[in-house]
Structure formats: C-alpha cells, structure tokens
Length: 110
Length: 112
Image 1: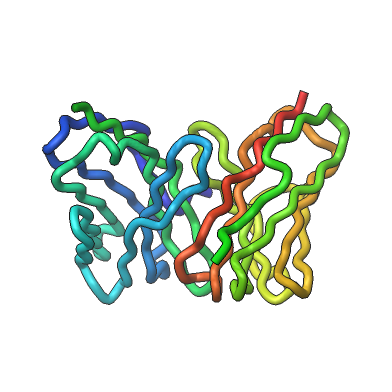
Image 2: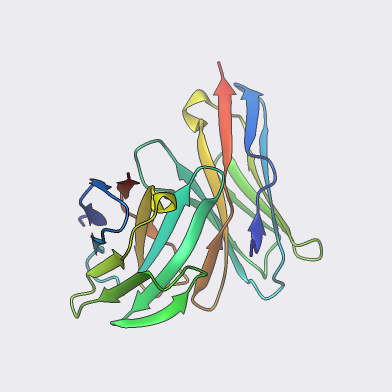
C-alpha cells in the first residue's frame, strides 16, 4: 500500500523560477518527514527534513512546508537552478518505519 | 567518514537463480534499511535491521530475506529470481533508523 504518494511523476520549470514538489501521506501517525534528491547512478542524498511539530523549515533555497490537517508536504526551491534537475523523493517516518514516495523528476531548463 | 558501500554494483542473473547483495554502513551506524527502486514505483521498502535484528519489514514475498552481522554489515538475499526482480537495490544506513538515512550507490540487478 502506498502510504506516501507523489502524484506528479515529472515537473519542468525555468531556471530562476520556483519549483514546487508535492507529497501526500495517508498515515496520520507519521511524525517526521524528509526530502531526498537522487541523481542518475547515485543513491539518494538527504536534502531537508521537518518534524510534525513544525509547519515550515528552511535551508537556503529549499523550504519544506507541512500541512498536517491535509496530510500534505511540499518542497519549494527558489530560485531553481539547472543543477537541481534530479528525482526528488519525499519520505515519512514513524518510530523506526520510513516510507518513500515514488519520486518526482524535476527538470530545470536554462 | 567513508560512505555506505554496496557490492556488487552490477549483477546479471537468470530466472530461478539466487543472489546475495552486500551493504557496509557508515561507521557507527547501527540501522541498515534495504529498498527496491523500479521505474514508476519509487523506493519500495524491503526491511530494516538494527543491531542484528529485523525491526521492520515491507510487503515483499518471503523470497526476499536479509541479515545483519555484529559489525552492522548487512546482506540481502533473493531466492528463485523472477524477471520482475530486476531493479536497483539500495541500502541506507542511519544511527537509529528514523533519523537521516545515508544511501549507498545501489546494486543494479538484471534478471534474464
């Protein structure tokens, strides 16, 4: 069962604009959320995380927003750069159980 | 610190065979998780080991098994391979399991 869903398999944005990647989850018990970025031929790398006690976390160009009532998570990248082109996975965890979404392929065009 | 290493990086097997994949976590990390990545399915959780014990398990058939050794190194075994088992198998290590996971480069398994 897909407890974490990324409904957009791909997203294309222009360099300098905002990229918004979305993620929905079904289990309200998840209390820690993460975003990972994956380049071809490499394993995913950690990008940013947020605890359920917060609704926003920023790290440079990356901001993660959490809407617990909607069970929705989003990642904003501003401004987007061509080097951000990768597959982005969201993950949700509870206790020692972590589940990932299917990923969204972001393409940032120069 | 050295990162997570996985061996082999590439593997070609035929249906019905079995395969063992290896993962060496970052030093000091006690949790190792295994994931299967296929196009369109994203990262599917296989199982997680912590201190030599399987702590969590995903929805995969019993042909998929694993173990963890006292030095935290982990192996994953797939028996009676099927064509659908062709995928990238990723392992990830972390200190406790629910904290940030660090992924290895993966093992690309092709079943012919």
